[in-house]
Length: 612
Image (cartoon, rainbow, N blue to C red; front, side, top):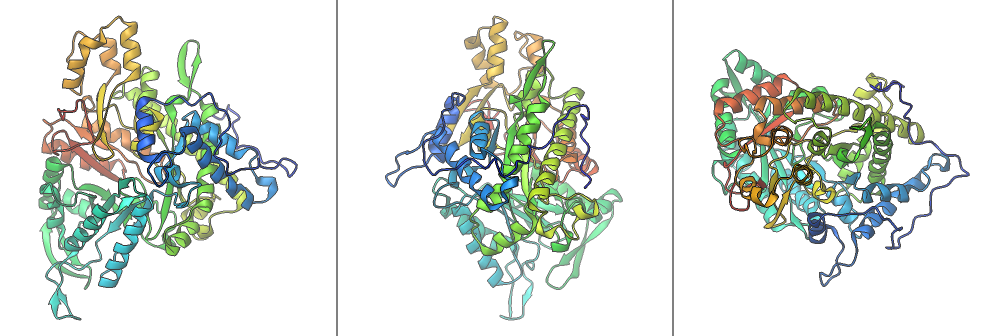
């Protein structure tokens, strides 16, 4: 077996040891009483989110578990999967170890696992992709399957490329086709009436290839604010389109039903429409399909055409993936009075987290038998990070610096290396994923348990529980307002800013109005320069730097990277175009831009009344 080499060869950090039969796994229990844990310290925001969405309730809607009981419920349920494997390879005290990880807020799995593990539903995955073929039967089957997945807490992605364009002839009825957009509206409406596990509405990704005859109508969809409100939209970009764009040539639109050319369009005209739409509403984003399929781990099983709703997890039809994220801001060590990343403890947590996610596949009750079969063929998991902006602040590194890019490379190279080692160790214990033969990993002589191991997710809800910055995003503002859960508004002032401001003798009460009025503090000269330099917000970061940061993480991610290229209201269409082109050149698998104020409602702002 060849595994990725660690960039830290002088450290002896291996997998968690394989124990012999004399050391059996801790007996798990369905008792709701967790072990004593003095470590669980939750912010006020975390408690609000947990009460509103995650803690178990009885039929009367009364909360019947504590946060500690939630984490024990999840840990003890996932630990039961250890019993499926030979005694010699079981992890001792698995439930306790995972419980400790979660109560320290070092690692959290995706929302469905927190909601459903150890409960009646037992659907633990966040990401699903469903096929949509060019027939009413396929379309309505997928509509039904979407509803079942949303009800269980998952999000769905679709490629609508195979649906014939509007006004195309339908031989069976002697009529004309209504086209993919009309059917997308059905999927959007269905999402409106289905709540996920009774707690939140579902999310979707809708993708249409750049060479579909209806592509211009698709690009313009979100110009109407009431259209497709439950969908993120992305255009599937091909290498051939990018080549036509670079050479300022036309390219062909192809009817997917007949596979014949319908007309040709200037690539620059379509790209300009894309840029204008993204500048105006933040959508559609771009998904680089050929880039994705060059790293498709199992090409024999099919071509990847879609992703999950936030774009970070490309999946084959009927695949699902369970995600989890490590709060890297918790992994700090002090050496000679200077904070550094604690790579030893991080390596141990990565191994535990990969094992947890692999166990989730065995404990999962999938919503469809097709999804069960396909997921267990590839056993894809997606371990990523959150708290990256907080980590940089703790290390005294501004997000918009070369030092931040270097830290990202060092961190994620190590992270992927250790995640791959953990998956390789599981393969030695439990066997490779069933679709290994003929896979890209076999070609590379990498015997892994999982076809993919690393993913950078947005971590919107779980970062609130962990009280850290989401994913790999910079701070949106020193003061942030998040709108979540059907109108709940959470306002927070960054805790590290509070500590540093107080250490410098600043009056925080006098600063609050300024912090609420602007996402950036760079113009506030009454705040010391050392604070302004360090507390960089999304709007202080150039579009180029945003993209370069995403590209660094993509280089060391098996799947994709969820990141928003946040732009100020004054950003130009030329800056959006440049970001799109740079993302393709640097090997990103997709890109989403968002210009402040381009939507009436946005998740992040710096005050409840100001979009900033």
